Every structure is written in C-alpha cells, then in structure tokens.
Image 1 (tube, rainbow, N blue to C red):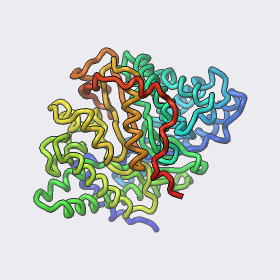
Image 2 (image 1 turned 180 degrees about the vertical axis):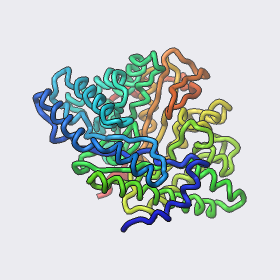
Image 3 (image 1 turned 180 degrees about the horizontal axis):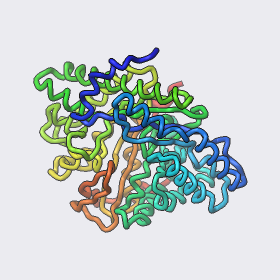
Image 4 (image 1 turned 90 degrees about the vertical axis):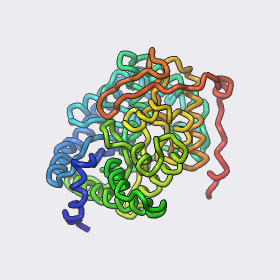
Length: 453
C-alpha cells in the first residue's frame, strides 16, 4: 500500500515549532560472510560489503527528506556484532577492523556505525574476553564506531563475570578518553535483553536473526507530544493516554513512509519503525518536560514514575497501530545529559540516581548518559549495571546502562560533551560499596518467568 502525502501534512506543521524529526535512518548490514582467518582478506571483504550496500544511503535519505519536508537527523549503519567475526583474530585484529569500519563510515558520510558488540549473557569464550578487553582502546581511538555488550537476558539470567569486567572496561574507557571528559563511554552501552533491530546508538547492531541487510527508522518527537499534552490540561488520565496514543500514531505513520521510500530506493528489505521519544539538549525537546506537562512539578517528584509509565505505554500503543513492524526500543528515552529538562531536574535536586533507577523500570531503556564522579570504583559501576540488568530480566524488558565516570570530576561539577550528547551535572553515587557481591562472579539464575515454553 502506498501512502499519500496528505497523511503527513498535519505533522509537517510540527517540524519547526516542536522539533519533530526522524532521528535516524539506520541501514543494518550482515558481515557474517566476511569472516576470514586471514585478517587482510577480512578487511577487503568488509570494505566491499559496506561500500556496495551503503554507498547510496546518505544521498537517498537526503533526497527523501527533502522531498517530504521531514528532517532526518542521522544516517547510520549497524553491523553484525564484531565479536563474532573477531573470535579467532590475531591480537591486532580488533583495532584494525575497528579503524577500517570507522574510516569507511567517514567515507560513506554516515554519522555513526553500531556493532562493536558482544552477546555474553550466558557465558564467554576466550575470544569474547579478548574482545571485551579491546573495547576501551577501540572506542577511545575511533570517532564514529559505537559498541554494546549484552550481559543478561530473561532466559539466561545475568552473567555476573561479564558485569564485573564491564565495570573495569568503562573505567578504562573513561581514562583513555580523559581529555574529552570520558567521551568514549558515551559510545558504549551495557544491555540486558538487547533487541537485535534497534536503530539507535550506541546500542545498534545487526542481529543473527536478520537478513543480509535491512533499513530501519527511529522516530523522535518529544516536543510534539509535549505540545499536544499541553492542549489538554484538564482531561482525565485515560483521556490523556488517548491523546498521546493518537499523536504517536501520526508520528509513526510518517516514519513508516520514510522507511518505505528509503528501502524501496535502496533496494533493501524494510526493517522496523522504532517509535521512541528521543530527546535532545535543545530547549522544548525534552521527555522530562512532557512529564511536567502531564502534572508533576519537576521531573523526579512523586508521581514521575507513574507519568512515565503512562507515556511509555501510550507511545507503544500508538506506534503498534500505525505500522505492521514496530520494533527496536519503542517508548520513552530518559538520557540525562541529552535532555535539557532532565539536566534542570538534577540541578534542582529533584532527580537523583535512585529515582532515575526507579524510572528505568517503566521506560524503554535504562540509565542513559549518566555522568558520575571519576573516582567511582569499577565495582560500583558493575553494581549499577547489575541493578539495571536485574530490573530487565525480572520485568522481561530491555534495560541498559550508558554511564560516564568523568575523570577528575566530582558530584555537582558539570561536564559538556556537545552536540546531541549535550552536557550536565555529575550525579552522586552511594559511597557504600558492593565489592564482595561483584567479586562473587558466576551466573545470576534466570527468573522463573523466563521458563515460557
């Protein structure tokens, strides 16, 4: 079925006023056929594959964006989790492949490439362990490459050995990028229940269940939702949910149109539409401000988690009605530094890590772009990851941690990253330790609800 341009006319009026955009068009590409024991041969195969499938990505997205009058903020690529390709690579393999892909991304004109990733929720091979050890140097030495590690799932439980390792990986990545306030950590996310079709960075990768390639779209639009919520200041909660759902439906239809046009012109299969409220540091483009418009005085006040749960569910319902293939993360993101309202809430003392963790039980991801003191112990970082993973596996949802221990910074200081990553205050971490718990290692058993056969 072809979509008529009239379907997006109502949404066009929100582009300038409410900061609506398609946050990303992401082309997923399988690199499995590129695996080779000869590293040089692998490099040649990867280069051919990316150049062949992605050579027209940026031009095509630009054309569709201009024709429809809908801004597309990012053009991205997601590849097969590279831990699989690098399982038996020589010592220099990870850095060589990472720098090759990073360089190709620059030549192709894409903003980011996701897929420096590993799936270790149940166990690790020796190759996986070498791969995890390579992450700090790789992400601090590249510009566009992003990475993720899935350490838990509802079916497998939590790999506590991987959790412990990732605490140290994050500390080392921050140290190696200390001149940029630990920026390498902003390109790394630790998952529970990672989705294989997520178009958003830093967690995008092209999963094993995917085909040779697929185009997916990630929608933003918190400014639009805030605007429409503000039009109904006195309606009941169920009526408010319906208002949000109907607008999410309209936004998703626009994403579906962009997806169909780009995929058809590239000759690539259609993936999914991810209807996620992804904020930016720009004033008026904030998920926190939606919650405040819904009725909490400041994000973090009592009632915030309930408001976020309502928002997240309504967005999913609207998206599911608008597209046959809604996937990815789909819901409301709550990154701190990327959301001006979140930053204001932290600065005002309304929002701390404890409340933020509670909110992650009902949002679409987890603790995102949280800056903590640079001297936060690796074990405490691992404990934060374990807490989020536990929320994820028990609730059978995706949770994640993208945390930045800013070198030389203490609670209350401010860090600036620039661009979509924004900046904000350093949040305090409990001074009480969890070293013994993290040091136990082993595998946290899967919850009983994981036995669904």
